Image (cartoon, rainbow over all chains, first blue to last red; front, side):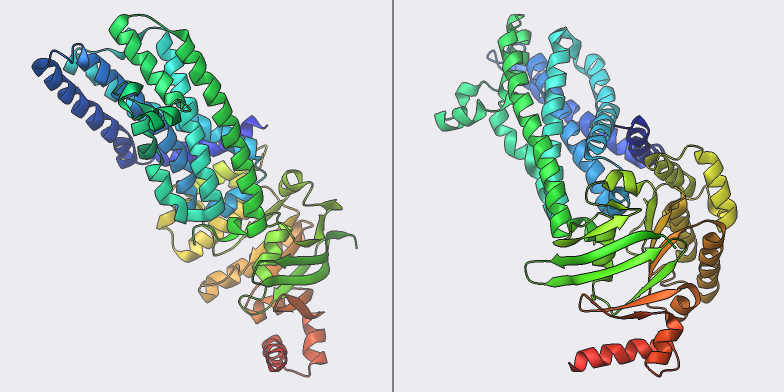
Length: 263
Length: 244
């Protein structure tokens, strides 16, 4: 792999963001609104319900974690969609870029895009709601990492579809995470789901990640089994995602979709 | 003269269409080969296979003696492509685009290369402007700069002067002539502009329905078909084929 080429593709997106204030504001705007909204909702619950004891911390922390996942995945997809929208796709694929370099560059760029959006949102939670996500302690790093890997994996699945089917796959790019959100058990325990959905949900790393986040906040105990399960599932899905991306590229070369994508 | 590009029995079949049918040709070092044919005749498909963007159903493309299928990444370092159907990111400035592509092609001294291309292609006045804000003539020159950023040995030009005013078109044609004099380069030029093809190309391939239906120098083709110019040859060949 060439660091120079990976950096080159990163620069393409860095220049794009750097040169556009509306783009930067757009990156910051939605996570901030999301966090503020969930902050007030959970404050209301904690004020008017005994059941929702410590709810501000739990719901808001889970909202931040979910938004991190959402932004990671969307950022990855957006990087790919930008190439389609700007009709630059063919230029990229006639450059001597390896698939592994494309993936590595998009992974790094997506992280930066995600952090640009989320860091300001996280910073305002403390003065506004008296909550700091850092209360999760060291496991927070593992939860973020796990979510990031899953976000990137979803991005790889969607980008594979974009590579193979072109812009027609764009709607799936936007809706993929909304589909998984109910099964991810972000704000509630898995037992809330009907049994059949519980079985499906256990196949997702999200259940273990959010279960662990809630557990740490409520009981102050860390169950590393949840973190381990999440990483094991993540490894499996990431491998599948990378395989699918390579396969889609090979199929796109066969079917000719690299030539006229975006038209 | 040694052959930079050898195309052997190249074929591309889609489910409902045979896009390219068993074509073979060669491009020598320092040669500009013209590729003529009506829309949908298989020119772009042929170029895409030569660039490794499309996998052939049968046949091979050898670039500098190496099969593109097995050596795609290493060969792409010294190849490039320009087409009016693909664009550079509009929100990036001209200079930013050239830096990005310089990095992607592993150009060692990017700033020097950009300076050289800026002078050659007269980009000074809009180097710091966003690419999307430029006129089509300016965009075309920027696309040419991108296509030359890696100092390629093999260049594919797909309608390089389409939609340009006569002055800019002439500038681009003169530039192509100039770069081939300065550097040994093999160029495949697909165009609908017959005067351009006659001016620039040593040899011409005539394509229709995925086949090469005739080839030769522009003058040979004109003489062979008893016509006054290449356009009349083009029209005659397409008429004959359509009647069949």
